[in-house]
Image (tube, rainbow, N blue to C red; front, side, top):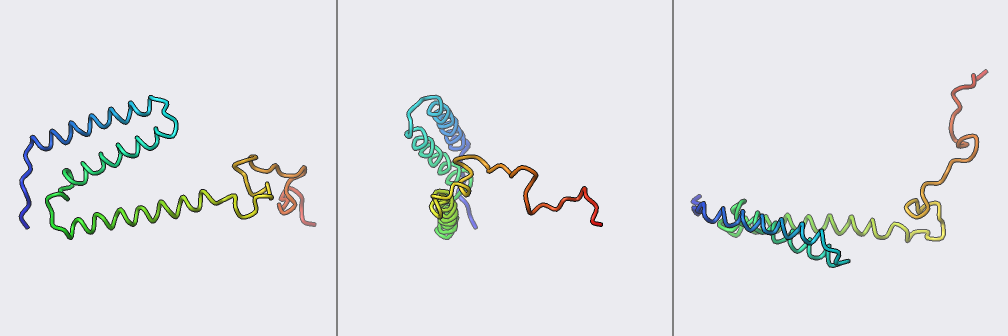
Amino acid sequence: MSSATISKKSYLLVWAALMVLLGATWGVAELNLGAANTILALIIAVIKMGLVIFFFMHVRYNNRLTWIFAGAGFVWFWIMVSLTMTDYLTRGWLRAQDASISYWQEGAPTPPPGGNPGDVNTTKSNR
């Protein structure tokens, strides 16, 4: 399999672009843009990811089968993120009126005085 020869100049230009985007990520994090912070940070991250995949991982110069497998990795990643976010965002929907299942709102419930009824007391002898 023959691979394209990539010049050192290309590598240095891609590295410089990654450093500029790193500075842009830091700059966006320092600004208070509300919800736009997350959106801009994700856009910059996708651009950096693309540069690394296309140039440093040599996907740009490989055949289309490599592109298909790289794309399949992103599809699988999107499936896993979607399922995780579906679980996370719908946790309070089951029984929203029951505050005991929503620990993130009120904090963990406190045990009753004297311990939990289901605990086995190991300090007393079983005579």
